Image (cartoon, rainbow, N blue to C red; front, side, top):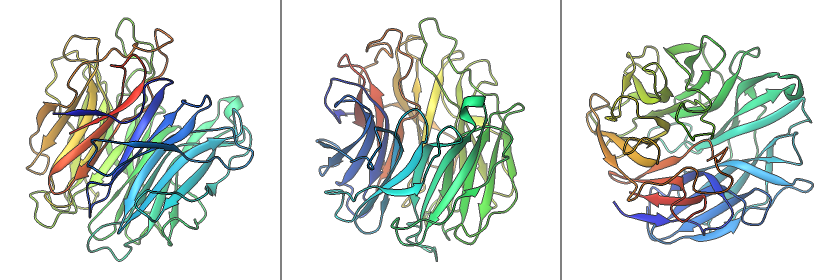
Length: 407
């Protein structure tokens, strides 16, 4: 599988995301937290040849802000791209900002403030953005943002899974809905969008006893039902138990629906996360066949040997064929260096085969300082219709944390 360097070597680039134009898969937009200019900024990388070559640019900060991180991209019909980021004026007041492109990612708007932060009282972080492209959805064109609202940060406060909706493609945003318990902690919530625009808002409650929950909306995000338990979760240690590892590994939810019209899993909802229940980090999947009301017992979907660490899963489901692709980091080959693998299912999540995505393993400590404290908190994958995928990840094969892509 070929690999391509998305951005230049040099200062670190972390936390990549990817959005693919479903009408013209040659057009891709990737993002990363990019330190090329010194402070962290949202790097934007555009390809018009299906991920082989990339151009690089940066999104502007709102006035008075000094940095940005945790960006995420989404595509909307016919030529819209949205990018959301956590922007900040210092060590607090984390704010959610969205940028819009209506020309296939050639240019982006000034930042649109979705929700402001206020000192250490309210800090918004770990955000994602989504666009309803579902074929039979009455809410086609709605945009959604999810994020963690952290409060009383300086006093060791809590974090809440938060949702906001836009009815005009991301130009304006409704007031936030807090969908998790306000006296517990969450990590980076997610949303899956079903065939008829049904929403599955997902989060992992990391306060013991940890668990994966969803809440359903059948009215395009106007309201949500009560929490539904997907599974208990054994949270992966913040630092994996591998000598020489010091980078953090957060346990987050991933969820996606099968919206393909011809698929063995049509209408299924898939929840994916990393879990330590076996004594090492592995990637688990649970599926729902009834619009999220009940969930199957979770199964591991990697074929790594026992004891290998598998983490940072990301999922995509082809809207044409229903093929499930889950990418993840793994140290399976020598117990230390990392690779990206993909677990794929073409039978609605009943069985998975695993393939290697990276063409060479890389040392997570391959950039200063050593040992590195951070390689980002996630990687990403998108469907290339009808049945392919493109993955983006942080890689140090050049001697620096750099974004790479491959399929």
